[in-house]
Length: 121
Image (cartoon, rainbow, N blue to C red):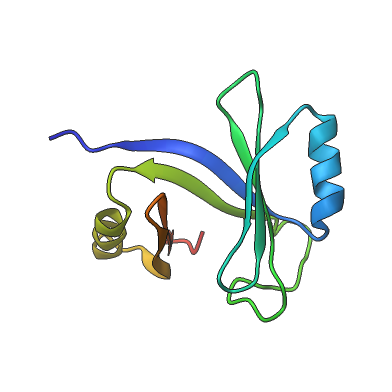
């Protein structure tokens, strides 16, 4: 059985969500999805209408487990992949040496999970 894995988007950490949305809109990106994460952070998916590329803007409050003092060069927050079974892939990647960053969470429409690669990314 061939398993589904495809690169979906990259996520960057931003200091001011509104300012970043305005900037990326000026480059032609459109908001496709936005929401609040259980730890209080906010995210905005922005899609390029002429390609299938997507950029996720992430803002984390100080109480968030993902918060870190913002410094230049720490902006690349994560890279997102679409998989056929997020819970299973989470277990597989941890067995292969990834560290758990956030266990699978979500709802019936989408399940997310976060792991750090061997270098902590």
